[in-house]
Length: 269
Image (cartoon, rainbow, N blue to C red; front, side, top):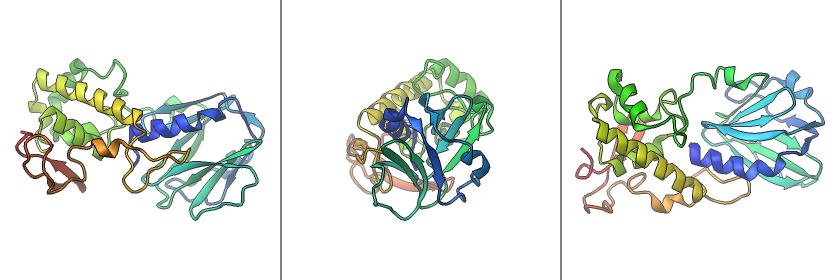
């Protein structure tokens, strides 16, 4: 599933459409995670894209008085083609048509979504989100205060978008490895120093992943067709039974909240 670095990479790849005129949106399949409002879609014609931004794992296309909110879901990707190109792929659900280019949203599992709203900050998908991990609001003081009444594991806490946005399974595993903290450990028992380590490693790892274009495992490609190369930096994720890069012990995989979790029992406690 695309996490913050992958969504940021996708957002950066589609930034050239900022300032361009969106001629129309063609919906081939409205049955995504939430049904697409086709009446609202049909009203969007010959409008200028004023800005393109990201909040958490959502991409915003801001128009004059509307915002299009896009979520990539588990397998959603964009690709850019020339207008008039005959290339089509299975699961091309949405096409954004511009003067000489088209932006295509492809999503095999259809867990992605597209919403149109007048007030994105008050949208039900957005209004309860936590702070961005790279912003100043996400700091050790915030984290230490937030965990006091949390009865969940450290990994579950980090993946809850109400606590901090954009951290999914891959980066939660990597952040906890770099912080020396077991994903099984209850987060409310962490001290201030450990909270500081989590925040520091979160910011470092997310920044590095964005720089390298995200992580390509099975599904993620940026809109410009490039793979993400952060996979070569992964210490624990998807490395079951391989040697830990630090202690040479074997990386362990177990299922936690129906997701695969990877960690080193010697390096993380």
